[in-house]
Amino acid sequence: MINFFKITPKERKVKIKGKSGVIYSNPTGIKRYLFYIGNIVLICSFLGIIYLYWPIGKSFLSYKFHSKQAETKLESFPVLTEKKEQISEFSLQIPKILASSQIIPNVSPFDAKEYLRVLTSNLIAQAKGSSLPGLGKGNTTYVFAHSSQQGLAMTRKNSVFYLLGEMNQDDLIYIKYNGEIYTYKTYMKKVVNASEVEYVNYKDENREVLILQTCWPIGTDWKRLLVFAERI
Image: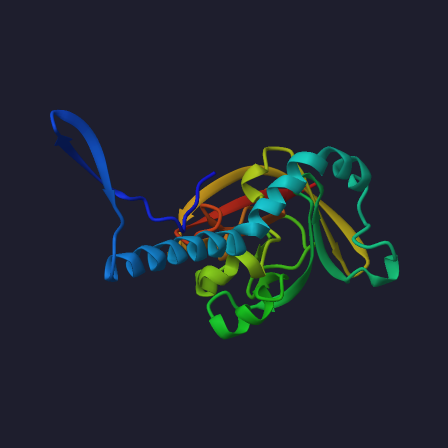
């Protein structure tokens, strides 16, 4: 068993009366203290990584072991909770990746103070200026759940869209809005730079579009993953 707190003796090869052998000497003084400090820092760093990224790991484990069962259970939606009267009037559910959350409408994606109040509560924001569901072709509903302004905290405080990268063509997304259930089917994924904000105003005259945004790669804020879906 590895003992991180046991100092490995320093090895010196010598010859005594024509015979070879090994003499060990333990580090002393400041070297001994540096050894212990280094190991404590290493262990704390390891535990810190587990603490920060545990929600990501938990999401993946749930997806791998329970996604098939959840997809069958939720394919007709509109069940976010056991009691239907508790369902938010504006909410989203993606059966494939076990994602469900309330959507907060009319949130500016350019005002950090405004959207951080939503994102740090593990909720989804609907971008101000984008359309609400049900307005027909030529309209786009843009929702997001992560932002670079969250820093390392984003790995713990908002896990709704962690698994968006697992979405494929024809996967279903459901939105409940004002008592109606709107069904969308995924048709495209795109990775863009964080500076490419023009998709908030994206339009397709032949479709009613839903765009889901998250930071990418997972657990970082380098780029953005956009999932495009059309209402069916």
